Length: 166
Image 1 (cartoon, helix red, strand yellow):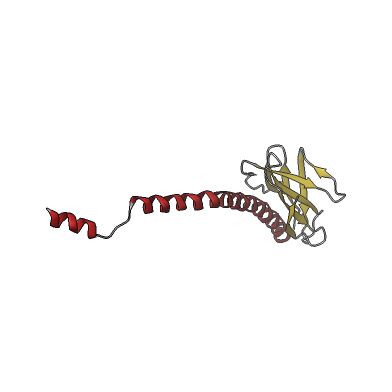
Image 2 (cartoon, helix red, strand yellow):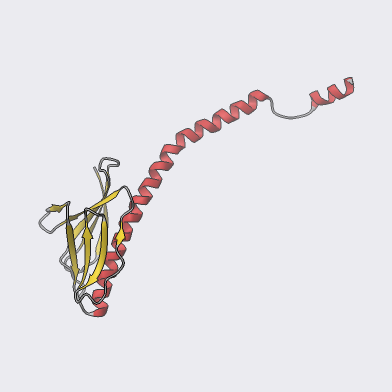
């Protein structure tokens, strides 16, 4: 019997104190990194919604050039929806809705911000547009200090994403 207890004492392993200390350390690291990961996920979602709108704008411009007719990017700020339509109504694409927690506003050429109702950005067969900008924010605002703004150049019709930190 003394041989068995002697063998047990000489076996290698971890003490309960060592295991508890490692678990406490892992918990501490997890609690410190979780807020960083959550804010990163929110930022990525915000960028994704903005890029979807920019992609729709680019598609509307491309269709206007290809089909040689006016295409319009339409937005309904109140319902958070946007869609593309042809001037002759022969083609209207699926309506898309921003993800929950996000809102958009349209900024016109005279720096006036439209925060309610509908807006339209026209793309012409030569690639130009009536210009403006679309702001994508968190809704309700104040959740983050970052706003993404998609500016549409009136001369070239191209769009560009700018990040604003308030």
